[in-house]
Amino acid sequence: MTLNPMHQFEVYRIGPEINIDGVNLSFTNASFFMAVSAILILSLLFFGTKKKLLIPSKIQLITEMSYTFIAKMINDTAGSSAKAFFPFVFTLFMFVLFCNMVGMLPYSFAVTSQIIVTFALAAIVFIGVTITGFIKHGINYLELFVPKGVPIVLLPLIIVIEIISYLARPVSLSVRLFANMLAGHTMLKVFGGFVISLGLLGGWLPLSFTVALTGLEILVAFLQAYVFAILTCIYLNDALNLQH
Amino acid sequence: MKNLKEISTRLEIAKKKIMGNQKSGKSSNVSSLGKALKISTELVAAVVVGSTIGFLLDNWFDTKPLLTICFFIMGVAAGILNVFKSAKKMQEKNKDI
Image 1 (spheres, helix red, strand yellow):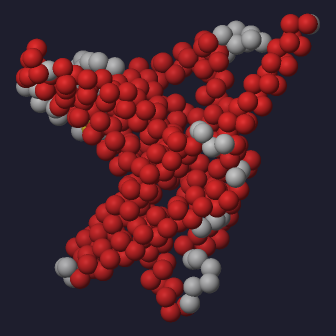
Image 2 (image 1 turned 180 degrees about the vertical axis):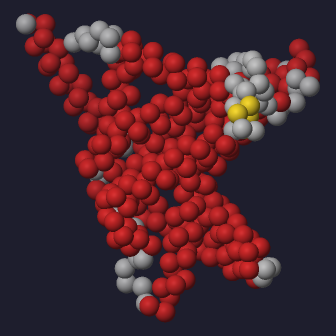
Image 3 (image 1 turned 90 degrees about the vertical axis):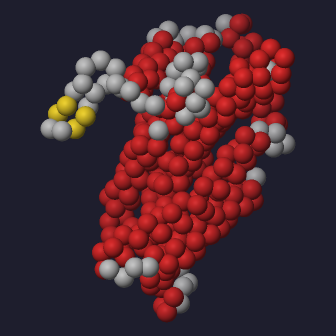
């Protein structure tokens, strides 16, 4: 049972069952680790900004680095007009990053390996960006689906293709994060299982693989949070500056 | 005050070093891995979305399997378009540097 590599993705209830109008709102292990990530982020930012030293302490340095990292990313990809969206992108990046990193700890649960979590995040981005585009440009936002210089005969086909490619955004955004985390954690577990079944004699090779894969997974955990944030910036850029 | 001045000169030197590193393109390794992961899923996602729309419309108009096939092909086109767009974006970015 414990050797089953998919066992780690099971969501189970912690505490009493809460049912409101037939909707199951019970507190699960997934909600627990989301809360842990949120508390970690809040405490990092709280303690990082508590003492404003001229020569920053380590924790202040991490806080300031994450701030400038996101601020620079927004400025580079979406321009200065997207500065108002800094809190949104920063929250998104930190949440995904901490969920991924907390998931790397032993005995913890990787929240981002659940597609409903990543899809909810991607849907928030998608709906938010679409609303922003309509607020900023009004009905002209639909020009996004009509590329310039296309013959009128081809236009109906091109518009349908453009709409499909627009709708594919949240799917690709969520599936990318979910698939990377799911595959990585499954692979770690499979190699971990090899260590046990091969025993003291042959277990060293898969053990070294597991160590290497853990390093790779930490890189992927950071990278996926980065990709999630930078794609949000690119979509914001499309909505704010109306580019194809 | 003397301490502060010393720090500011050291900061200047460090900044120059970082700028020099960025110009030689040492830090682009991580972001190119990110780009590779990004493009691969974009192609798949558009095909999935296209086929799903076709399937739903088929159920609605009762014209199985005609619209599914049409929208599958358009989904493939949209996927290639997405990859093309992001590749173009990358090229433009490289030109700036």
